[in-house]
Image (cartoon, rainbow, N blue to C red; front, side, top):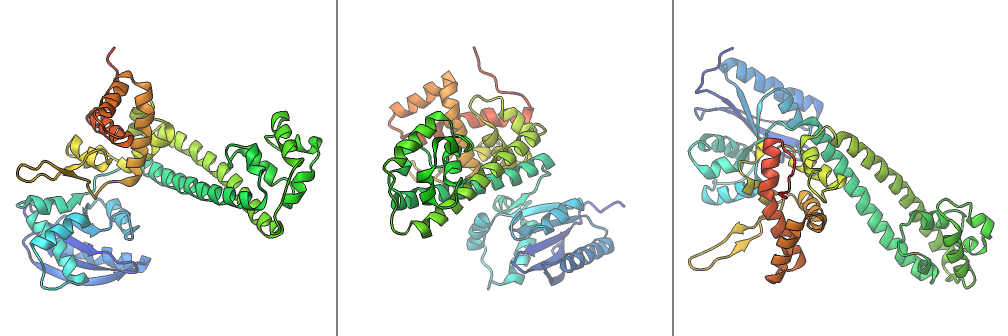
Length: 399
């Protein structure tokens, strides 16, 4: 079917947790229909039925704008993309600024959906409106998978850290001196030792032969444990808190295996990701950081220039100058997960690349703190990364 070039069916969606407000209009400014849909399979079916009926009546292609892309609206956003419709994300921070300049008489869900249709009308004529509506570009499936896996891995690592801190505090309170035999409470052999018998006091009575049967414990660690056993002390609440300690230790062992399995999955998927493969050629960029960056970036088509990528990765500030005053401010629309991965990767990179090491030391000599120098180095490398990904070429160091 040939669509009139000047006519487009436009759909605005104001996202809620249980139901969504929808407005359908045309590119000529006319409002066709307003309704609400439940966040259920029946609600999605009703949505697509109404939108497709309007598109057939007016013989127009479909463009959809919604708040909260990849958030509460899931899986409606992926269903829209699967139909091949144009999908736009409404940038909430920029929308708030837009509403300050072009305020509505009131605020409710129906008014907000009409505001999305207004943005469609204005985007070709007003740059600010165009910035509020961000077109969702197709993302390779392997990067979507890496995003899921890396976020899951990060949650498990954070859980392990919290458990480790709690475990360390409880051990200090219940059996002082036990932590002295290890530098890291999450060591495999130490966790195996904590869970090898039911009840902490029994650990003080384990014989050397029994210690050597515990996974991860050899003669060295068995000797350290025996030194502790000779002066082992337990507080009066060891029966209560000791069970909690052993439960936490068991959970940390489970997390260890789950994180290891996720890392194997990420390595397998990253081999198919162009972004992850190219980042892997940069010295210091490891599997976990590459998987996180590939998943969070998704596709470079969403960035018009390298400066946009630098802001997204948290490596650049925004100009905030006024008159003779030259200042900058931190942007609010930074991907915090990508920023954390980038900071970790850059810290490892500057230790392995002589040119980057010199640049880092130069910034430190200028008085910048460690994190500031790392961000400066990251900003310096963003154009290189942007061109690498755009041109699909590996990192290369001039001899």
